Length: 405
Ligand code: HEM
Image 1 (cartoon, rainbow, N blue to C red):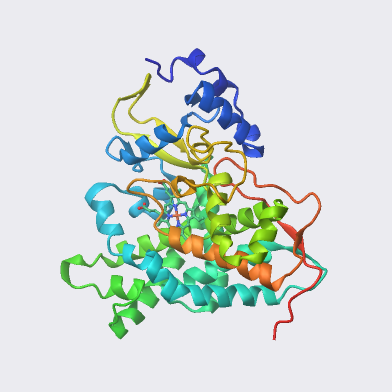
Image 2: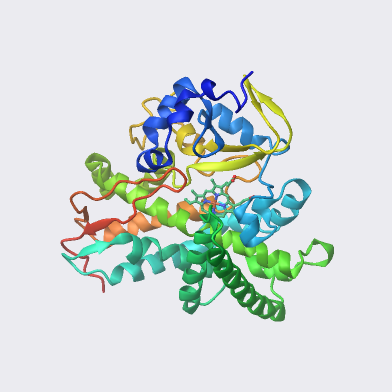
C-alpha cells in the first residue's frame, strides 16, 4: 500500500512541474497513465488520477470523494450551491433546473437565438483583416447565450463580463490575495442585487415556463429560498462562460489544422456536431475535476488520507489508449467518442452540456458559412493549460466574407 508519504513511490509525480504541465500536459499524462496511474504530484500537493476507469470510479463515488471542502475557492466565492454540495442538498439544488438544460428544450428554446447572436458577432468582421476570434466572438457568444437562458436583456453583457472576470480571478487566487477576494465579493453582491431585481419581475409575471420563472414561481415547499436561487444561478452563469469559449476555440483550431476534416465539414455542415464531440475528447476545455477525500480510502494499491485532494484528470482519461485507440489522433469518426469524460460524470456531471455543444456546433457552422476561406494565421497558438485548456488567442483571417444581406 502506498500513501502520499512514500515520496519515492512516485518518481514522475516528484519531477512534474506546473509550468511544464501548463505548456503541454499530454506527454506527462501518457507517462503517468503507463507508469504511475495514481500519483502524488509533489509540487501541486495533490493526487493525480489519469486512467479512464479510475477517474470514472472516483467521480461516481460522491460519498467518499466529495466536492465539499473548507478550502474550496468556489465555496469561498459563491457560497453553497450545487457544485459545493452532495446528497439531498445537491439534489434539491439541481432537480428544479435540470429540465431547462435538456437537449430538446435547448433546441426548441435557444438554438435560433444562439445562431442570431453568432451571426451578429460575425457581421463586424472585415474581409482580409486579422481577427482575434477569442475576444471578438468566442468570449462573447456564451455571455449573450446565458443572458438569453436567464431571460435578461442583452444590455447586461458588460456587467456580466466584468463580474465573470472577477470571479475567475478569485477561483485562481491560490495565494489568497485579499484584494482579489474583496473584488469578487463586491461583484458577487452586485450580481445578487441584479438577480434579485430580475427575480421580482418574474414573480410579478407569475409564469413557470422558463428557468427563472420555474425557480421563482415554484409552488410550496419545492421552492428554493431566494438566496439559494441566486447562488445557483451564479454557478450556472459561471459554469457556462470560459468553458464554452474554450470549446469553440478548440473545435475551430482542430478543424483548421485538419484539412481533410475541414473539407468534409464544409461539404456537410451537420458534421460540425462530430467535430465538437471529438474536440471535447481530444482537447478537453476542462482538464480536471477536483475531489476531497472524506475518510481514509483504499483504491488499488493507493491509500488516500482524509482531507487529501484528488484531481481526476479528465483530459488524460480522454486519451486513455485502452478505450480510445491512437488517442492523440483527431478523428471525428471514432465510434465510441460519446464516452469521453469532458463533461465529467457522476452526480456533478455538467448541467449545461447540451447548451455548450449547441453553441459550439452553431458557432462552427456560422463561422464557416459567414467566412468562406477562413484560415488560421501562421504560428497560431495551440490549446494549452492543465486545468482550463484553450489557445490564449486565436488569430484567423477570412479573405472574403459572404454577401450577407
Ligand atoms: C464545453 C463547455 C463546458 C465544459 C467543458 C464543462 C465542464 C464541466 C465539468 C467537467 C463539470 C463537473 C465539475 C466537477 O465534477 O467538479 C461541470 C459541471 C457543471 N457545469 Fe459545465 N461545462 C461546460 C459548459 C457548461 C454550461 C454551458 C453550463 C451552464 C450554462 C454549465 C454549468 C455547469 C454546472 C452548474 C455544473 C455543476 C453541476 C453540479 O454540481 O451538479 N457548464 N461542467
